[in-house]
Length: 99
Length: 99
DNA sequence: TAACTATTTTACCAAATAGCCAAATACCTG
DNA sequence: CAGGTATTTGGCTATTTGGTAAAATAGTTA
Image (cartoon, rainbow over all chains, first blue to last red):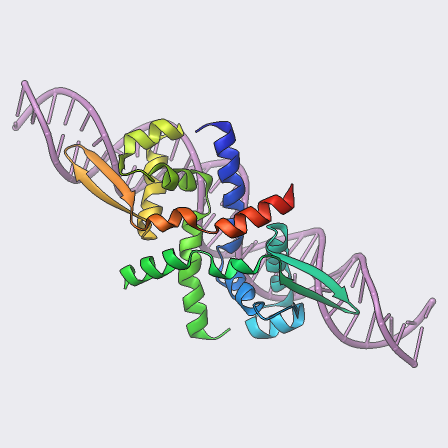
C-alpha cells in the first residue's frame, strides 16, 4: 500500500473511529436540531459526565462537532450535519441482511 | 439512553468499527471493480497474510463483503458497493477543515 | 493417499480504548 | 476574593484491537 494512499485512508479511518461508538452516534443524532450543553447530553445518556465529556472531545478532535461556551455551559453542535446521513445506504442494506 | 436506541446505535457502531481501519478502507476500495483473492489483496497491502485474513473476517462479520471459494482461492467482493461513498460529504468537509 | 497451495485459526504480546472516581480548571455571581 | 456550578483532565483498571508466527484446515492435483 503506497504511502500517500495509506495516509489518505488513515485520515478517513480516524473519522470512522470517532463514529464507531454507540454513545457517540447517539450524541450526533441528538444534536440534529441544534446545540446542547454537556449536562443535557449527560442526562439523556446516563453515563458519568466525565465519560460524556471525553466522547465529545473525540468527536471534536475528529472535526465532527464544534464547542462554544456560554456562561458556565459548554454547548456542542454538529459541524457537518450531513454526518447524520452517513452510511445510510450501507446500514440499511447490511443490517437488513443480518437479521 | 433507552434500550432500543442503544441497540440501534450499537449495531451501527459495529459497522463503523469495521470501517475504522486504514487497511480495511483500502481493501473495500480495492474491491470496487470486482472480486479479488486474499493473496492479491495481501500483495497490494504488504502485511502478513494472516493479518489481511483477519481484516477480511471483520469486514465479512460486519456484512460489508462476501466470500466465495474457487479452487484454492478465496475471493472477496463488496456486498454493498455503496459503501465506497460512505461519509463522502463528511470526509470532504471535515478533512478540508483540518488542514 | 500424499504432497502442495491458499487461507484461517490459535496463542501470545503490545498498544489503544472505555469507563469511573477524584482532582483540577473555567467561569459566574455575590 | 469566596463560593458555587459546569466541564475537563489525570489516574486507574478492565477490555478490546492489531500484529506476527506457528499450527490447523480446505481444497487441488499428482
